[in-house]
Image 1: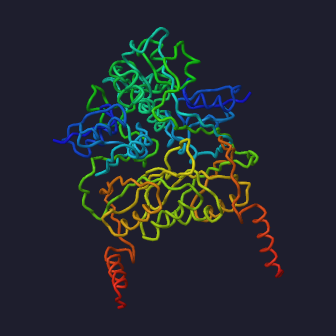
Image 2 (image 1 turned 45 degrees about the vertical axis):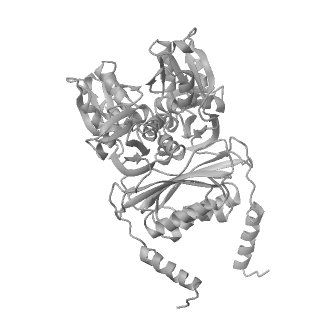
Image 3 (image 1 turned 30 degrees about the vertical axis):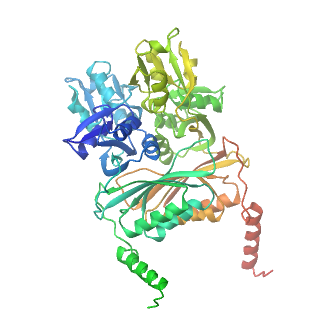
Amino acid sequence: MPTIAYFGPRGTFTEQAARGFDDAAELVAYPTIPLAVAALRAGEADFACVPVENSVEGSVSATMDALAAGEPVVAVAEHVLPIRFSVLVRPGTAAADVRTVASHPHALAQVQRWLAEHLPGAQQVTAGSTAAAAVGVAEGAHDAAVTAPVAARHYPLAELATGVADEGDALTRFLLLAKPGALPAPTGADRTSVFAVVAHRPGELAALLTEFALRGVNLSRIESRPLRDRFGEYRFYLDLDGHVAEARVGDALAALHRRSQLVRFLGSYPRADRVGTAAPQAGTDTDFAESARWLAGLRQGEHA
Amino acid sequence: MPTIAYFGPRGTFTEQAARGFDDAAELVAYPTIPLAVAALRAGEADFACVPVENSVEGSVSATMDALAAGEPVVAVAEHVLPIRFSVLVRPGTAAADVRTVASHPHALAQVQRWLAEHLPGAQQVTAGSTAAAAVGVAEGAHDAAVTAPVAARHYPLAELATGVADEGDALTRFLLLAKPGALPAPTGADRTSVFAVVAHRPGELAALLTEFALRGVNLSRIESRPLRDRFGEYRFYLDLDGHVAEARVGDALAALHRRSQLVRFLGSYPRADRVGTAAPQAGTDTDFAESARWLAGLRQGEHA
């Protein structure tokens, strides 16, 4: 049975994502994202589950910084959860009885309209995590907690409401990390993540993105990382559609390598939404193979 | 005396940044970033102070989402703080007495090496904010709190250590927001922030960044925002060197407007580091004025 280290505590969205990867795995909570990744690096766990985009409780910066430095780790899968909360209370508590509602500040920020409508008189109290808020309700410190749905599994609380969200279409993305090894096989609907450091001058980033565009490789995410007291370089994180095993993706990554001071490959893995990525015209593996054969022939004196 | 709404509670890095903007201002804490921005929009405050990059406690996503939707607000100043913590204890407490150390999970994540070296036996406890951790120490719930330096002003606690950070060069950037009005005057060392939505297809982003590169406008930050259950568009946030009053910056922004489904101007304001931005060759305001005169002349039948 594999072990998954995750950014805890128990009862958060990250636990819910870890169960989404493998509900039979042994889950071990760590108090911070770097500690969860360190457990993977140290061999205490087979995998680590961390938020990577638009997280409710985890700093996405912390995840990216953990991936960018230290022993290499790679993503082997992703999982996407809608950002919808449950509101938990002690059994028998009605909405009219709720005087205080607790949660992580990021979670409170995402349910302001719902709270104004359904618990308008309740005082808002911040907690270290959505799960800590649930513990606070169970212990009588607060009347209601805004939590991940999975929290209802762990605490003797009742659901006052579920599916709570001001914006219905927001998502959180999580990665399952492993030590480098055999890559997940291409599925035709894959994503590749990389971290790179390039010279910071006008036009450098435009040139680099043009390398991807010329090969028909779509970028699904770009983020410059992070503000430091350092000039003359540009650190960023890219997600692109496709698998490193595909010719156009590999060719674009090789161009990225030539243009970068540092590149770190962070994995090719199936997309959670299973949306396929078709190679563009003149960018299929066959096109690349034929052009390589033609060039090799030229170099051997063949002019056919 | 102006009023600044800030992402609280009292004693956090955001309070420290708000004091950095105007130490004489009346500061009013709000429990979430959207509520601080809403207070500005509602006229309850003259300004709002929010983290925008690499924040310890605030979700930068929350700030950008608050800027992207709702009544327009613009940045009029930025402030940068080094991410260095104080470790606060009750007076008379020595390091050897510390059994529990509390803080916001993001803050704990940034002092793991320091804690391993200086408080190796202490159990780590998460709190809703660095300031909430300080309150917990004052009340006897924990022995030590990892906090913003400003927290020492508010609580009857002693500094066990200051300047604590695993990475010495990390920074947090804050913006001072106001309702739209007269722009801050160009200083020669300015930054401009915009939010844009463009069609999501290969090459679109590369083309857009090339518009900036061709005009010699350097991008200091790019971030795609955020993962939503929506396809066919690419939402992102850009920081660029220069002021919208400068010809090359205005011309690049006009090109961004032509290529975007939506653009929101988020302000031109002096850079905190005061590093000047020189116009590149062929990109000065004079160059733009002369080329415009020449073109107008052609259109009037002048061929000089």
